[in-house]
Length: 157
Image (cartoon, rainbow, N blue to C red; front, side):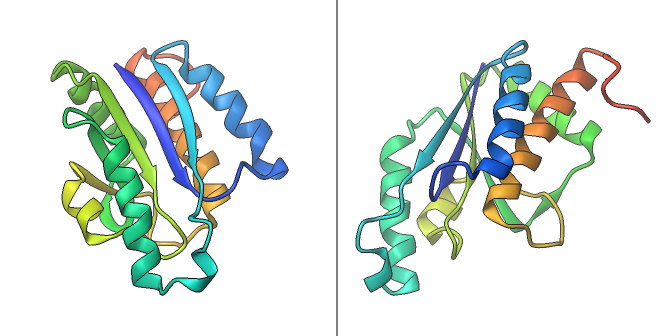
């Protein structure tokens, strides 16, 4: 199974870049993994919130294949413990999912079309985090889940 992290916005800021790269490298010991930064549309500042989400949504839906399992990070999604995330990832692998895509939406969230396409909506927390920090938290938590699945020492409970 391949894991992809997609994020709408600009490249990783320096304050998260090293951590994101480190955890991504660690995840690669368990799964093929990659990051894709989806650029904000060129005329984003001139678009309404709804039009911007629609344009971003069109790009996302074009990039997804029908068999991709889309996990949308959304504040209204279900919350998981670290063990729950590990179980979730293992279940996707057991279902022979070929591609697990975690999507961090744009500044205003995602279009309804993407919301409807999502196979699962996951909330990291009831708190709101900057998109850059979400990238780091996401990478770390997926790595933690991998170590839980392999019964390795990283996760202490």
